[in-house]
Length: 242
Image 1 (cartoon, rainbow, N blue to C red):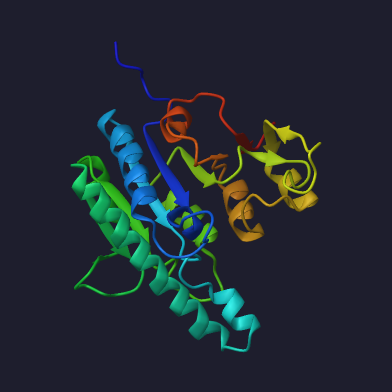
Image 2: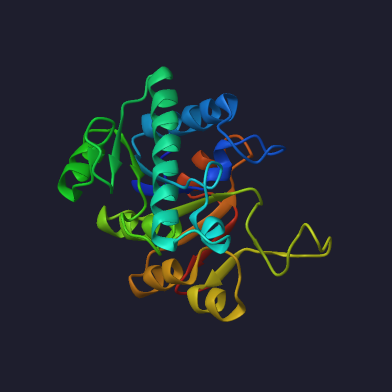
């Protein structure tokens, strides 16, 4: 008997770094993107409706460019364009493994992506397509973390999944502190009060106000996306009650 998924509709947030070779930290690694596509296709085939928000930090990070003197709004728009490149790369990989998908952009660019229209996105999901959201929110000064929380709420996702390079949230940086301990569950307010690096404060506050659970997990471990969707205790869950 096939394993029943724990969630019926989820939104997965992928940072730009998820597309790059870990040793290089920039660019798009075809092997990594293909692995992501295979995992998403497997989840999709189990009947789960999947949406993805992608970052662009592996290509261009607006906040860093602004810190070096570039006008902030222009730098952020360039970062939004970087997310489009990642989204198209993921869409191509999904197509090659036989998964139907649509790329929807918050920035109008009809030759390469559909404009984001909430009703259309919902129809794509209901028809079993993976929907990839690019272009952030379409506004400068907002991160793709915030875009992920907004889109998760707009599509009625049951959970926002945050794929990272560590297996959850720790009480201190596990890279710097070998005695750092992983936290299995947290309340939103704890994340904000303790300044834990889960998502930016705007995204956390939005999820808190609308009771959207967040699951932070290790994206690099093969099969983890399916485990999280199936409701297995993977990573750290952030919700209204720990």
